[in-house]
Amino acid sequence: MNTAANAKVMIVEDDAELVRGLKRLLESDGYEVVPATVSLHALPLALREQPDLIVLDVMMPGIDGWEVLRRIRASASIASTPVMMLTAKSSVDDRVFGLSAGADDYLTKPFALREFRARIDALLRRSRSGLEAPGIKRMPVTAERGVAFVDTSDIMYIEGMRNHCMIHTSEGEMPSRMSLGEVEMRAGAGLMRVHRSYIVNLDAVRGCHWATKSAFVLSLKDGSEVPVSRTLVAEVRGRLGLC
Image (cartoon, rainbow, N blue to C red; front, side):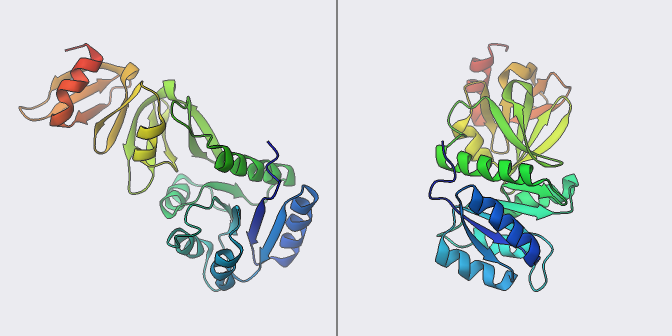
């Protein structure tokens, strides 16, 4: 798929020299580029231009990138537009904060132009082709530099947060941009919604029991326990064939 064909990328960055360089790079690949060097102009420009993807710097004078992102996600006509943040911050807390605000990808400064180009292509490819389709075998999670993927077979359970989720594996937890509802719609049969806040990998369940007279829980291979809604207990028991 030629992701550059008819694709419009908006760059919101107060460093005019960086904007010029990124603009030349993307235009050489066939993208149409809309530059914005003043953060206050970003939202009205995005509403007018309707870009296919927005590259957004975090640290800018006036209003910062997080506030611009919040306004983008609150604007119906561009709310679903993929947004890649350019940031010097890469801690888990920073990534979780960004996911809560609605970021799709991160690129930590300084970055290689080749990586920047690859991330632009990947975001547009995912947006256009519906990569996250029903029965997906991998889940996108935020990594120290951008996005990584976790095989669904390695997942213990998925915990729903405000508007993103945390992927729990035997090696730790990682935030994902997907909501719990999106995971439920797109995941394969091995992942089951067992509670309003939890999806469990049924292959990771090693047992189940009543913790109290009203609390039914699943015990997982990594030693964690996940509650099951009372209305789903019979279905879960049937799916597991364990008890």
